[in-house]
Image 1 (cartoon, rainbow, N blue to C red):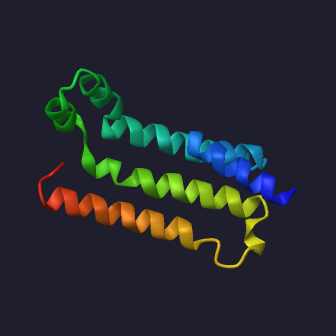
Image 2 (tube, rainbow, N blue to C red):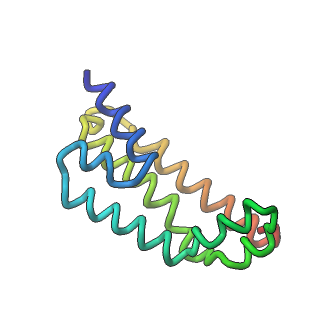
Length: 120
Protein backbone atom coordinates (compact mmCIF):
# COMPACT_ATOMS: atom_id res chain seq x y z
CA UNK A 1 0.00 0.00 0.00
CA UNK A 2 2.79 2.43 0.85
CA UNK A 3 4.51 1.84 -2.49
CA UNK A 4 1.36 2.84 -4.38
CA UNK A 5 1.07 6.00 -2.28
CA UNK A 6 4.70 6.93 -2.89
CA UNK A 7 4.32 6.33 -6.63
CA UNK A 8 1.11 8.34 -6.75
CA UNK A 9 2.59 11.41 -5.10
CA UNK A 10 5.63 11.31 -7.39
CA UNK A 11 3.41 11.17 -10.47
CA UNK A 12 1.31 14.07 -9.20
CA UNK A 13 4.46 16.11 -8.55
CA UNK A 14 5.63 15.36 -12.09
CA UNK A 15 2.32 16.75 -13.34
CA UNK A 16 2.69 19.86 -11.19
CA UNK A 17 4.98 20.57 -8.23
CA UNK A 18 3.01 20.83 -5.02
CA UNK A 19 0.20 18.43 -5.90
CA UNK A 20 1.95 15.55 -4.10
CA UNK A 21 2.12 17.66 -0.95
CA UNK A 22 -1.60 18.40 -1.25
CA UNK A 23 -2.30 14.64 -1.50
CA UNK A 24 -0.19 14.15 1.64
CA UNK A 25 -2.27 16.85 3.38
CA UNK A 26 0.74 19.18 3.67
CA UNK A 27 -1.24 22.15 2.40
CA UNK A 28 1.17 24.97 3.25
CA UNK A 29 4.09 23.23 1.52
CA UNK A 30 1.88 22.33 -1.43
CA UNK A 31 0.67 25.90 -1.92
CA UNK A 32 4.24 27.14 -1.52
CA UNK A 33 5.49 24.83 -4.30
CA UNK A 34 2.60 25.81 -6.58
CA UNK A 35 3.30 29.53 -6.08
CA UNK A 36 7.01 28.92 -6.59
CA UNK A 37 6.35 27.04 -9.86
CA UNK A 38 4.15 29.85 -11.16
CA UNK A 39 6.78 32.43 -10.18
CA UNK A 40 9.56 30.57 -11.98
CA UNK A 41 7.36 30.03 -15.04
CA UNK A 42 6.51 33.73 -15.29
CA UNK A 43 10.05 34.95 -14.59
CA UNK A 44 11.57 32.48 -17.05
CA UNK A 45 9.03 33.56 -19.69
CA UNK A 46 8.43 29.95 -20.68
CA UNK A 47 4.93 30.53 -21.98
CA UNK A 48 6.26 33.18 -24.35
CA UNK A 49 8.70 30.65 -25.75
CA UNK A 50 6.13 27.92 -26.37
CA UNK A 51 4.21 29.69 -29.13
CA UNK A 52 7.20 30.52 -31.39
CA UNK A 53 8.53 26.99 -30.88
CA UNK A 54 5.27 25.56 -32.25
CA UNK A 55 5.86 27.54 -35.44
CA UNK A 56 9.44 26.32 -35.75
CA UNK A 57 10.95 29.67 -34.74
CA UNK A 58 13.42 28.24 -32.28
CA UNK A 59 15.71 31.29 -32.38
CA UNK A 60 12.87 33.56 -31.28
CA UNK A 61 11.81 31.08 -28.61
CA UNK A 62 15.39 30.78 -27.40
CA UNK A 63 15.81 34.56 -27.26
CA UNK A 64 12.65 35.10 -25.24
CA UNK A 65 13.55 32.74 -22.38
CA UNK A 66 15.38 33.81 -19.24
CA UNK A 67 17.73 30.89 -18.65
CA UNK A 68 18.77 32.04 -15.20
CA UNK A 69 15.25 31.33 -13.97
CA UNK A 70 14.98 28.05 -15.86
CA UNK A 71 17.85 26.75 -13.72
CA UNK A 72 15.41 26.61 -10.79
CA UNK A 73 12.99 24.27 -12.59
CA UNK A 74 14.80 20.95 -12.10
CA UNK A 75 15.56 21.76 -8.49
CA UNK A 76 11.95 22.65 -7.68
CA UNK A 77 10.52 19.67 -9.55
CA UNK A 78 12.89 17.15 -8.04
CA UNK A 79 12.76 18.57 -4.53
CA UNK A 80 8.97 18.63 -4.67
CA UNK A 81 8.95 14.98 -5.73
CA UNK A 82 11.45 14.00 -3.06
CA UNK A 83 9.62 15.88 -0.32
CA UNK A 84 6.26 14.33 -1.24
CA UNK A 85 7.91 10.90 -1.50
CA UNK A 86 9.37 11.23 2.01
CA UNK A 87 6.06 12.44 3.44
CA UNK A 88 4.33 9.41 1.88
CA UNK A 89 6.59 6.99 3.74
CA UNK A 90 9.74 7.11 1.65
CA UNK A 91 11.81 8.20 4.64
CA UNK A 92 12.02 4.53 5.62
CA UNK A 93 13.76 3.64 2.34
CA UNK A 94 17.53 3.95 2.67
CA UNK A 95 19.31 6.11 0.09
CA UNK A 96 16.03 7.10 -1.58
CA UNK A 97 17.40 10.61 -2.10
CA UNK A 98 20.10 9.51 -4.55
CA UNK A 99 17.98 9.44 -7.75
CA UNK A 100 16.58 12.89 -6.97
CA UNK A 101 19.95 14.48 -6.21
CA UNK A 102 21.75 12.95 -9.17
CA UNK A 103 18.95 13.97 -11.54
CA UNK A 104 19.16 17.59 -10.42
CA UNK A 105 22.95 17.53 -10.61
CA UNK A 106 23.06 16.09 -14.14
CA UNK A 107 20.39 18.47 -15.39
CA UNK A 108 22.45 21.43 -14.21
CA UNK A 109 25.65 19.95 -15.69
CA UNK A 110 23.86 19.39 -19.01
CA UNK A 111 22.55 22.94 -19.00
CA UNK A 112 25.95 24.42 -18.14
CA UNK A 113 27.69 22.39 -20.86
CA UNK A 114 25.26 23.41 -23.59
CA UNK A 115 25.24 27.07 -22.55
CA UNK A 116 29.04 27.11 -22.40
CA UNK A 117 29.25 25.59 -25.89
CA UNK A 118 26.63 28.07 -27.13
CA UNK A 119 24.36 25.27 -28.30
CA UNK A 120 21.34 26.75 -26.50
